[in-house]
Length: 224
Image (cartoon, rainbow, N blue to C red; front, top):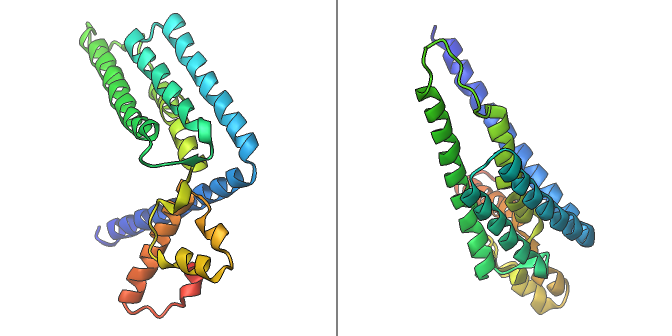
């Protein structure tokens, strides 16, 4: 077969593009929703952080999760909680924000290493090839733990926090200064923009710039 594998590759590429667009649209919508309901979003995020801290402590006490990794997870969520003091605005050079980004990666690596070693030990202790390892979490349980206890709060912060004073550069960075000089929407242009929205806008502007360089005569207002 020659054509069917090509069709499979093409379908995978198209599906990946649609999935990327769906994620970007969801991030954009959630960021706008948080901007409209800042007080409610702050309250929900704070309660979410406390709930996950309690869940990690329960896992440590009841399910015998490693104490040191649990303490690291609790400490990480306390650092995440520190980003709520000026919610929804954040400076990308703020030590708490930088520490939060580092702790996300550290937690992911250490917990992934922990679950990998647990599975390796379980398979090595098998006396027969036909035995099934016991007392090891399933893929669904591991994925759920990562989703809820490792990535949920950082992802929610990424969607909710706004970069103050336009600290995230855009493709047309002259726009805000011109608007401010004309006295029209200067305050709106200088207002903090959600991190997720800024990321989507930057990617969208980059695609528009590449399209113009490639000779696609698309009106620029389609990307605004």
